Image (cartoon, helix red, strand yellow):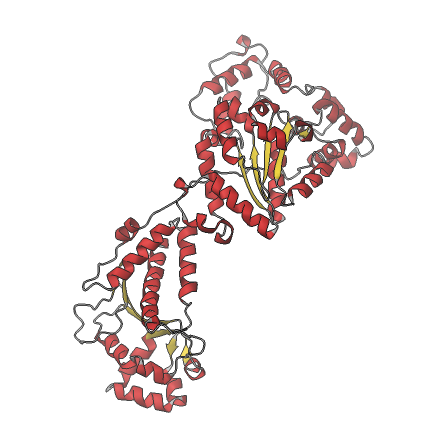
Length: 557
């Protein structure tokens, strides 16, 4: 096959363009770094005819000017830089150009992907050629250098300040690295990067190239920055599995590339969301490719409205997909997500996982919140249709109360029949005991002989419901006493109906506490916890005789 005679020349120009792109990437990452960047530029006050450090000139914000001479090697590992080649490639011109620059704050450098031979390498100290070592070991080269200077101090000034940067990445590696930064960190599309590279190349061939400013660069680029949604659902440090056996079976199933749908159901407070958050962490540690969306995080979440909006949820999931390496999502990582369907990401990741034998799981939790708080069945149905693409390599896990299951498309019921759904009914006795022991370690030691009866009472009172269990344990801790069966008898029992349980709690509140609860629900701003405590302890305008006995409202808060 005939060798392209223009390969070396064109590669040299391409390498100049890529190093220009590197400086631009550095500038985009640190907008305060440069004032402007020029290509093929000779300062007006330079008096010599052949200025040879002109490939790229970048002016920093502090006034320092960087001058680069770019040299590309076709075979950098075998075609090594020698002292003779440094002379042949223009060392004398670099010296004259360096001294022709009438600026105190200047930085000059040779940039090359080529490597130095041993003689040159032995004389390099911190990217500079050490003239003392040259004088000692490279007599012929030193004699040539001496012939360039009438003043020895000029020679020393050049070699102390001019950098020789050997061993830079080759064209392909440098371009891949820069594109990855532009795609992943700077959220630029492939079209935007290609547009910028064309602009750099065109300007390099112009008689009077454009001065690159940050505004010009940004206008040339196409940006894609889908907004992620916070998915950090807190898992308590004393977390216990509702059923470790079922958990292991689920892990085993979704660790295969078979793909499918799993449905997790349970009543309010049964621990569905907490379990699914724990499952997410477990899958991540096992190396699975896993994504999630929680329709509800916590009562203090300021993004709850966005969290219920299907378009916003899709945008958030796209943002998570785009964080994946390009070997997983291929060209989707370089495209504008505004014109990319979520299905395309799901199909691509599933395809990758089938090839490499990894698990790909998408967890959607809290579907019932869309109906109850978003008041929109259509919103939920539309979203399910965006993620419901059954195929090998893709597992979809849905967590919800049964109120939302009537919105399931037929395909979900076919692929995940109701008799295969996993129902979380609450914690088993051993799990309740472990949590109680962690909450009251001293009582466990002192009452070890009687602690099992306390655990039995806890199960009787809470029904193993994690939310109720934490409420009960927190209430007892707030009393400042240890745990006992007597204290547990004063707390309403949970009968598997959360509404009835909340009604029982409501009946226990004082009239003042109920009044404050109503007031808090209509406020158009949020109170801090300490403000609520302060208000409940100082009912200035309300006398106790208007509200029955004066009681502490701490339990309400």
